[in-house]
Amino acid sequence: MSVREARDEILREHADLRGLIAEIEDLLERFARGEPEAATMLHASAGALYTRFIAHLVLEDRILVPSLQDAFGPESAEPVVRDHAEQRAFLGYLMGRLGSNASPAALIANDLRQFLTLLGSDMAEEERMLEETLDRVPSRGRS
Image (cartoon, rainbow, N blue to C red; front, side):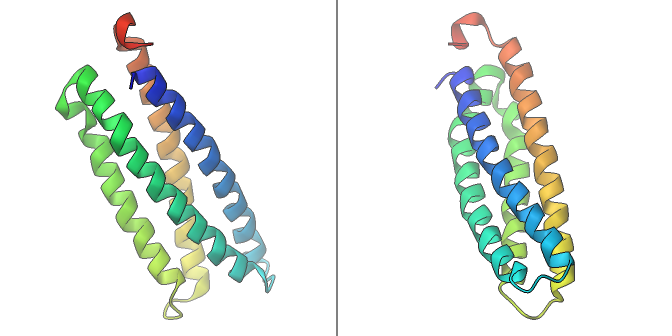
């Protein structure tokens, strides 16, 4: 897969994830206002985000990492691989907390809100990196 094709697929995935993030942010606001159904809906939407995000990481590991390595060498993908491991671990931790009554719901909601902010920043950084990468790839690898 070319870097351009990888970028286009990742951008589509990011757009889908942003839709889920917006939905969860809305539910977090409703939860903060004390709307009774918001907690149940938040749990379901966070579960959907977890499933979708893990699938997205698998996709990026399959297409982005090799594209970066092929274009710029093995070390170029190390930050992506490290970020993915951290994101998997943290989101798994949050999902475990969401499924438990051991932690106060407000604290879990704050942690989830922080994760969503970091995720949005990470996607923006990946998109910037992909554009820079595409600009540096010789024209034969851009197709």
